[in-house]
Amino acid sequence: MNNGIIILDFGSQYNQLIARRIRELGVYSEVLPFDTPLYEILSRNPSGIILSGGPSSVNAENAHLVDKALFEKGIPVLGICYGMQLTTHLLGGKVKKGEKGEYGKAKLQIQKSNALLSGISRFSTVWMSHFDEVETVPDGFNINGMTDVISAISDESRKIYCVQFHPEVSHTEEGARMIDNFVFNICKAPKNWKLTNYIDKTVAEIKEKVGDQKVILGLSGGVDSSVAAVLINKAIGDQLQCIFVDTGLLRKDEAEKVMKNYGEHFHLNIKLIDAKDRFMAKLKGVSDPEAKRKIIGNEFVNVFDEESHKIEGAKFLAQGTIYPDVIESQSVKGPSAVIKSHHNVGGLPEEMDFELLEPLRELFKDEVRKVGEELGIPHHLVHRHPFPGPGLGIRILGEVDEEKVKILQEADDIFIEELYKNNLYETVSQAFVVLLPVKSVGVMGDERTYEYTAVVRSANTTDFMTATFSKFPWEFLENVSNRIINEVKGINRIAYDISSKPPATIEWE
Image (cartoon, rainbow, N blue to C red; front, side, top):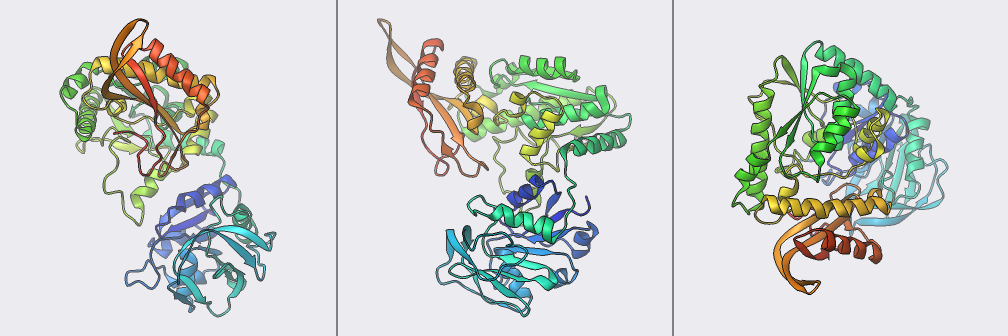
């Protein structure tokens, strides 16, 4: 899309956040690797270019650099953190190794205002994360702001603005105003990003690409695959064939709910595959977490492969790939060496001869949810928590069998039901119950029991890279515990997980 803002990625953990902040203003933005050729950047006709932060040093032998000609095209440039150091380095200033660095909150004092800092308080809190610092600025640049170091510079005649801090994070008090200033006052970017327009455009593109061919989609009931299915169905109707595989490791009544919500309500063409026995047979006697993941992933691929070959005339395979997946795959840090196998059931086999259809690949998760609601998917469905591909197979520690699955489904269902009843579900990011391979003595009535221990887990996070445990009222936890112990045969003890990530992970396996 022309006239958006291009963000060049130098490895910052915040580059996706920059893009989201700009899209929230109604302006299209996309993240590209720092070494994207200049001609390719210019071919997008951007209104402005942002150089993101990054962990490396401009003085390093293998420093990430850009073509110096980028600064000579008359396109506004904003350098953030490493982007400020890079701009200084390339344009003749000097960057030195800091004596102690700055991390966390710092106090910015504006020395001389500019278009980027227009309307910003003389003193404000900003978020720092750097070690190197600018020692001397390039010719033609002004020093606009200081913390303990030079923290804002600009050459307004060339529309080049730089800040050492991160305006995109919420800890920078007036960062949103700075981004707004850059996007609208400096770049004059058009408001060209509206999700209703995105739906219309994508529906037209799907119709043109697919023609009269068939499309296969593995529907999981999760947010991404569900929104992708409804969007594609809007474009081509019965040409879309969804395959829903019941692994026997899903939430309570999940298959019935998916068939009702998407089959009956949205009239999606869904084939339900009951593969519970196959998965249980493969998992028999297996306790190792990674072995369980691989078995579940491989078996899912086998089932999906078998079913897809039964569909005649299918040319396309649709997937719910979203923009963070795309950014991760092209990141300067490289694709993750090991993608967590509990996030996906497993990659589809290379010999599956289909063309990919990924209608959500330009959207962030919050945008996917908004598209879902625009398409008429009920709010509670598009705001569901993530559910791991291997499902309850990694929430039952140790060996998995049908009895344990049934116990965990009932316990988990009670916890989620109570979250909804108490208006807590959408205040947390992910919540579930874990069944331990541990039995303990209890007393129920006049009888002693010897049954399983379950752990209630709930986490709050913005990016799933770090997380804290949810701080629920004691009365709520007491009620959840009482209900599970009284209503679920097989559990007589409940614990609440109060560990954060790191050092723990959100899932237990």
